[in-house]
Length: 316
Ligand SMILES: Nc1ncnc2c1ncn2[C@@H]1O[C@H](COP(=O)(O)OP(=O)(O)O)[C@@H](O)[C@H]1O
Ligand SMILES: O=C(COP(=O)(O)O)[C@H](O)[C@H](O)COP(=O)(O)O
Image (tube, rainbow, N blue to C red; front, side, top):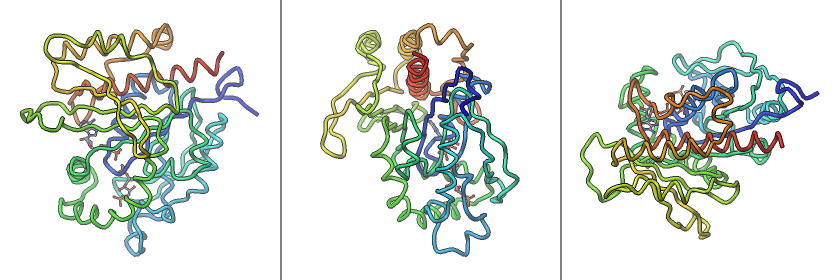
């Protein structure tokens, strides 16, 4: 029985994969706030951890290892969600490291599934309309993890660094290989060689693989070429397998006015659908306590385009 979505339609499923502190929750949160919790469900698949933190301490592997997670149950639940069915999802409390009472999740029109291993198996990958892999440079991710885990999860910097070292072989074996299955690979980083002053917002590089239809960005890019700086441009890259792939560069060092031109142009490409559901664009680009980033907002706008586009195709 298909339900939950009216007219027998299934939810649009977006996966956001990446290592710990790669920025998955940050990217997800803005999308949920923009589309509204009444239209979007967010699920974190790290809730499928098989052991709590104390039990895990005595095991020969870390939380990144597939054997440390109920991957088979995750696959079952992803299939149910993708058919519009509810699940009783386990819950892992990151603050205490304990597994707590499961929660009922009813998929809305859009479902974001973020976490360490959502693209690990073929069956899991088959559940998604759009797949993203977050790929910040490792030193940046490490500093994000130290900052976040010390502020919110009760660790010391030394403990976080030791844990990152312990996890590295499993990051290489199980997390990073998921990059190859993403339709879009996102890397937030400073632009190499520019020597921008501290505090300059990070830029974003997005590999737009031809596994899904991306929006036509030619006019947006032309409109973005203001003054001496260019807020955004497309380059042809070689992907890991040697094939050419479009790389969209979104620059953090340009003025807010220049970024606004790009944001407005992509917003307009969302079409009438943007106005229909009462979207909240102010929610985009937020990270940390009260910081904002235009490259993050533009990345989220592109994902919003894909979500609404997939929804529109389903309706057609
Ligand atoms: N795009 C970004 N720009 C700046 N800082 C970011 C960005 N994404 C994440 N961060 C920082 O990294 C930390 C970890 O991000 P988070 O979204 O919690 O990662 P994950 O959910 O992948 O573990 C955040 O607390 C934030 O400080
Ligand atoms: O790697 C992660 C994933 O979460 P995130 O991507 O949000 O970091 C966490 O560290 C583990 O789930 C549990 O680890 P802990 O033992 O620290 O609870």
